[in-house]
Length: 507
Image (cartoon, rainbow, N blue to C red; front, side):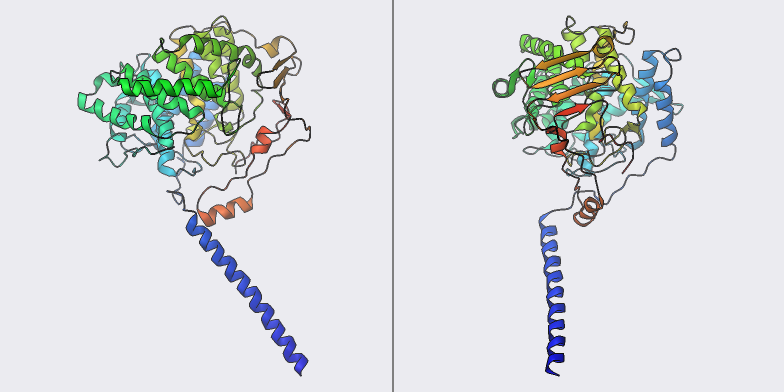
């Protein structure tokens, strides 16, 4: 009898311990949840337009059609209209925010909507600079310039519901302010001149917040410099701020320039941010103020391209590093090089690298829902950084923006295309400054990048976005995507042929 009572007691004690453990675990998770705040707008889902799939397929078919059917200008004009239609379909009434469909970032949905506008704006602006205001979308005559003009005023008005917000230290708004400033400079003769003095001061007041905020010590250094150079060119020069900006620029160069055209970019080091952020920013700084540091910008551009031009082929380029959804911006320096250092890059070579890159990714599903997808080909949360939201990947437009700008100075759309290095011969070239080896195989068209410092040839595989990630996101209401930094930076080899992490399937 005593043994039976003892067994029952032990059984009850065991149940009590299990219950206590689950209770403690529940309390622990509740504590963690109170410490980790849900992302703003997590529960909001943007609906895809019913007709969007038809539009996505149409642009793919049109863009990839034989060149005998459509000229280069027609194909890229059609592509521009596709992105305009995406903006018009998902913008707010004021136009200052664009709530695209797609996954949210840790910054929140409203910041993602600011990115959606800010990253599209320079594309619209450079189109305005060609003398165009109106375009036809869905058989409607649209005055895009007037829509954008009002959007800027709404976004910089603290009393407007779509106000972009006060810029804080290390704020994503600093990044977006640089694109907005660039867009204003590109359209200064079409939009800026239409503003009253009070409206100009309103816009400048918002932009100037970014000039005295703490920034991340990497490519972010170039954002306040770009903003101030635009402000200066628009007639808002301040010698005190100018001295501070100059000091920031020279400190950045001294600390992060490695030589041979390449920059270190913390926290990860050397990657494609050299192309789609650093040389992109330096090019625009030089265009805005040709007297600022022209010799260095030109020479570093040329040195960078002497190696970088071997990265491109019909199959794209070897992808590594963070922010891979910006992949369509990778040929940007090739295009700016055609203007800045034509002795290194001809218009025909620049256009071919650009066109083949866009053709490759569009053929594999990189355009959906009026924007660029959140992956390498289609949407892929295994590769999407937590700071990337629905509109973030529109940084991919940066090569397109440069192409329209450069074409106004040297012919791109009508250039006699020049074969890329991999289409001409095999090659194997080492850059000792950064420890990279680039190899091309003419027969296969394959291009291989070897990171020489990564000695191990054991391939680090992609960690997939899984049920575990989904459950964490449901519980905490914020992104919990897999950490794939080792796969993106620590492998010895990255190739256009062997890319197992190229997902063609949606989440």
